[in-house]
Length: 390
Ligand SMILES: Nc1nc2c(ncn2[C@@H]2O[C@H](COP(=O)(O)OP(=O)(O)OP(=O)(O)O)[C@@H](O)[C@H]2O)c(=O)[nH]1
Ligand SMILES: [Mg+2]
Image 1: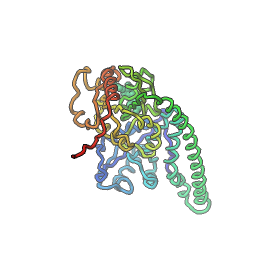
Image 2 (image 1 turned 60 degrees about the horizontal axis):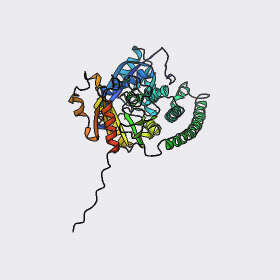
Image 3 (image 1 turned 90 degrees about the horizontal axis):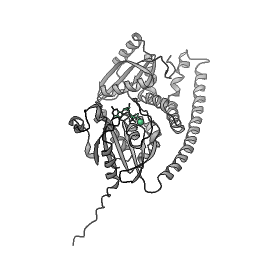
Image 4 (image 1 turned 120 degrees about the horizontal axis):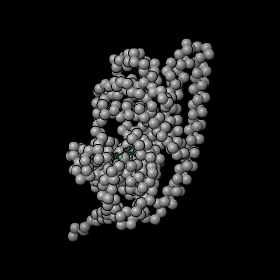
């Protein structure tokens, strides 16, 4: 029987194996090793202890996520390495999850459940908690049937299957009711926030939003330029709630600036929807500061993920300044030129300006303020008018 799907956050750390596939037809631009390295960080953030990785390359997706031979390898590891959990690097369908759980006889978690788990631990505000609650409940609903499979396996027949099925129905009804309740509460909280936002954005203050991959240093930069005390930590998803502050640009122009939730590779669609509201500030921004951690070996891939997701959100055209942060980790002074390795891989043509900073050392803050000011005061390009031919 598969164990209950909950995570331990106490001193006991579940022993987890990580499983990922490289599907050629999917055209992933992340190397599988990099994706699993991040999955490992997420697993640690959720309270698990990753002990081994299993990977497979395939031409097209497999109905069981990985091939038969690989599943046997996993079964072997589970038996001999005291594994509590198997974590898969993609979202599994309810069927795949159930099949894998049946085969491996340990809890099976996918990337989505893992990210939801980390988010659930970090959410602070009422809205943040409600959003997570909504996403988790939506994730759970199609997977409810699998949770009762142990009743069927007790041998079937009288007194097992019937009650099991009834229980699923009861559960589904309860979960649907909960969904409705959470949605209603969210609506109330959001309309209240919308009213506050309208008050804040009245007048002609420019709206600026910090966006970027999780752990890039958005909150650190936000704190530096607004002198606030937003939590900045070396962990994935420190920030889940948008914080907004007023700031004055060098010439006295007023602006509001927001710190937002971080992006991640393969952000589950359930969370994209749930966090669209949190990213509302970015949706309405006059300008985005896209923060990249230049010290990360995955800087270029991370920048690409953010650019792609901004495009998906319909804000790919908002003017963007590229902020190459954590310069102190790759250079000994703020004047040392950045190695072209990173720069050549990031598509800098998407950005109107590039600034290098170190939020912890305070490097590049004047440049950043000046760049923001030049950008928000830059006259919009005049519309092209047609010239009569004769
Ligand atoms: N050395 C160095 N560390 C930095 C710099 N900027 C941020 N950090 C550190 O990097 C870690 C992550 O910073 P945050 O500001 O929390 O990152 P974030 O982008 O807000 O992350 P999320 O909220 O998780 O999306 C923290 O430990 C910061 O102190 C920098 O310029 N140099
Ligand atoms: Mg943050």
